[in-house]
Image (tube, rainbow, N blue to C red):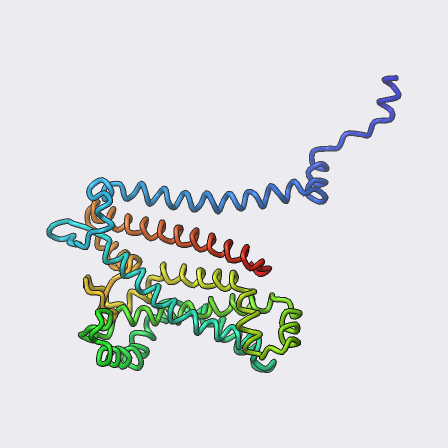
Length: 328
């Protein structure tokens, strides 16, 4: 019986053949590799957060949570540090950039996906996507020497003349300003939002367009009442991608925002963002507490970005669940 079982048994596979078989025919290796890639991304995020937490220990011990609500920043004399002006500057410039960029990006995406003739759609789409590849320093130089004197300053003068009674438009009108940074950011995030939104509209089945037009809807009604609600979660995702770039943009903003600790609410005055203060002063941080305060600002920016993205993903999930959105 034992002899029969040995004679009928298959010869054992070598280790190399087993590995080759698993690589060619098994899903286990594929799951292992994809799972490892996902864990590596998670580990990288945790490693960045942990390093920022460790390197900001002196600042956290010295100032605690008051660091987030204090406006004082005097590394030379008092050695007092507060991140409130930089947090406010980051949020204000990013939100103003979104207010400007989202309608323009949505219009560009609708035109490219639904209205542009075939001979224009591809080259125009390529040019829009090419804007995303322009280096930040080029945007900064263009903004400083062309955009600010040619557009931002006349716009700021008009806003100050007509709406100067509002705190956000009070004078004096200065060339580098929060408004300049916001508008440059809007131009920088426009190609990202436009390209993703265009792909969202293209992913919506054509049957939905045909059904709306067959029921008597105009082209505008079909776009606004059918396509936009159907792709709403994808459009929100595109907006969040643009917001993520606006929050962390450094060089271009540093060149056009003015880099001044102005405590006013006016968009027409210079300011700071969290990224720009780090870029400007980290090389000049000559003692440990100064360096730790700048690193803690980086930690705040890191946490703020994570929170905004988590809230945005929750919002996108709820919108997709409500509308049954296939493009999410």
